[in-house]
Length: 549
Image (cartoon, rainbow, N blue to C red):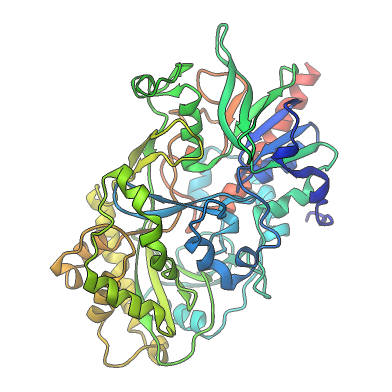
């Protein structure tokens, strides 16, 4: 067990980047104070000076972040200062990027579960250090949830639908039905990766907030070597941070599966032809940067209820043998942001050639009536593992604040569609189960629930008449992001097994952009936080070894 430390004195080391010096030097510079970055920074500060550059602000003091009831509202906020940044893939699927200290852990549904033992083995990780790193994270942010009536009914419905066995409460990834952990405590308060900075040595760490890194600086005599970064504060003023002359110093990018490959490209590391077209000087022609972009497709049905339902997010999960995961939420259903779409999609769709008027006036009117009426409802969803389908990322502008163009190619591979169909069959069985009888109107068939979902502007993809009777077409037409996208800087393609960028010294990438074959567990945040701690420990071991030599 680890001893819990007192809350971090954030006022002593987390500052608005406006106050940052014009030039400064650190042993480690971490780009992105997100899910992996906070854990990594706290660990490295045990033995070295660390700078964290985070493009957003603190998650504390914002009730929409800290309280479970605010979940949907953070996603609905599309203002420039929002902690979530709307992005629409070329597939016509809407997702979000975190723009806040703590990253996605400050925005997501809070489900906490470890990766499978198979994932750990394929990643080549040390199982003992993995376990210790998970425990280090869990002592700060993970809790056993108290299941109330809706989630208890869904859990029973999963078992009734054949998602067996009953595995009780566990953090482990085990086939069957289980209750996992949550980063929301029993008072509904969210705990994020930013809380892991309570482990940090405040004398050795600096966190610059609202600091957008525009490019990595390199020494290019001989083999390229990372030397520092150029970043802009909220006033647009440029600053530079450099690595110290210690040969063990490193720059570590933890900007997420969209931000990390984007930053490498902006810095001259990526497909040479694409970078030349943008006028970017080539540091290293690396055609695999931005490739392998994958997003686990999510599909769902909404169940309007004649009886009250509590506010809840993901708690029990069904792990099927065919690669589909079943989850649920209630009342705080993430559809309220759809009302904001007309305000938020216009500029995005112009960039990607998508039609913001793809929904008919009658459909929009029907959706408005649904969303603006008092809605007691639950949502049951399925997410497929993998996926096998993947796409790519391309730069749109030279400003790191702007979204790149991302293509995920949902259901390009037939095996993904097959998993979705099987998963939706389980979802429908759960919805029709005896356990959920009190939460559904008795005369409403599953087809009507699917038709309602087809009417919602959950994405910008076309709808087909057969979608309410064909699960294959329903999966394609109603696909959503569950924010588990990954790839772009994959292991053995862009980074090695120590997460060092191939062909460049003193540069690593440590986040979900490095995942190659899957997103870990049913929900990845636990493993991404663990990876930050894990690699922090490995880097410090390497640092100590090099000093002894």
